[in-house]
Length: 203
Image (cartoon, rainbow, N blue to C red):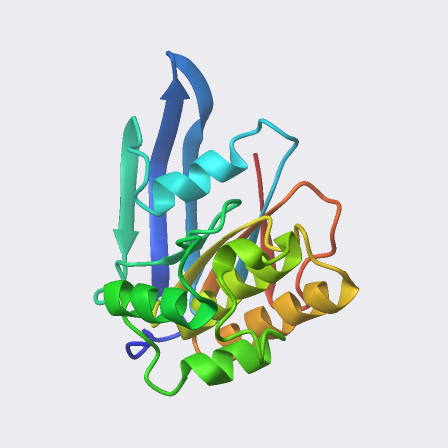
């Protein structure tokens, strides 16, 4: 990833952020910042706007009011959503190579190394449509690991994972923060927060 800013400089700053759907407020106004080396745990009941917030921060939806400021050189966060962003008829390796070509790749990581980390070694030539839900989530995690982005936006990252997969997410988040990155993690409270420096944002 690009060199992270100093620990006292936020990777992301949000001021007065609001979003409405069909003139009905979904969330806001929100004010918060996320610094290098920390995770912000976004909690709330189903329908509270957790996914919508991350989609706004990822640039997939436009806010109705307020501002989003990224640290210089860190304006392209990595987004892990509910649906896998893969081409069904491309192989595991082809999908990762395609996405790295679009979004860049962390210089010290390889596709093969990322697959080994997430437990998909040996699945290089498997088509994405042949993978189980849990394997697709692991493939999404491999793409996340390859991303050069300092800020991770993780929407229910533990969904479709067994206990081993949940610990994998925790290890990845911990390593990313240790490397100067930051993460926003949504949860409805069914899973424990990653064992890292964490603050809470309730919706």
